[in-house]
Amino acid sequence: MAEVSGKTILNQIEIRSSVELPSVRQPVTLTTEDNLKLVAELALPVNKEPIATLIMLHPLPTAGGFMDSHIYRKAANRLPYLADVAVLRFNTRGTQSPQGKSEGSFDGGVSEKFDVKAAVDFALQEKLPNLWLVGWSFGTELALKYGPDMDVLGAILLSPPLHRTSEQELLHWNETSKKLVALIPEHDDYLKPAEAAVRFELVTNFELIAVEDAKHLWVGETSTRRVLNEIVRVVNPGAYPLPDFISYSGGEPTPHE
Image: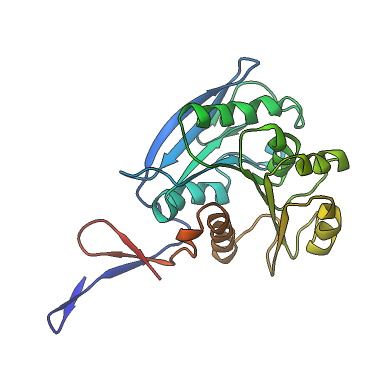
């Protein structure tokens, strides 16, 4: 912090990969209906109630996906503070991350239905508001399969491959009022924007966001910011767009453009 002509100039920190903003972090154990214990974490805003809740469904565990995959870790590090959003992350059955290993074994998205339900049930028991599923790659398959029957407002899909999702499962979303939003990278390895538009045309309440220059793994701060901004635009539009900098004046950090 510096002083120029009697005025205090605030220190500024750019919000980048390593920045972890204030939140209340709680390790959580989820229990499934088939009696497995899943490793989880809940990140909440400090001294205020959340506006919305994100339930994060991670990428394919057999390809290195877990609750600490970078977009999800950064969501937990930033969104409780910047957007008053609760972030619930967990490892599906058999998945291991730096947070620990969940019981059970990978089941290709079948028994993982119980894992999604355990996370939603926990959020409901905790009286967390306005639940949204956020799926990334394999996690989008779980969201698409099981989201229509869960007590959530909708799902946000990051890089959906649509490998395990049937036409019937897509049509099931039309039997609900829930919304689907899909972020499709321009250079995705599995499903590009034009293909996604065709595959998702069955769904009535659907928004496709084509993201230029992005790839399936959303590598880089530009992609991270775009993803987190689009999530916030959907679940708490009053906090959109997210700031790029945090200012310090000797007390709590303050976000600003």
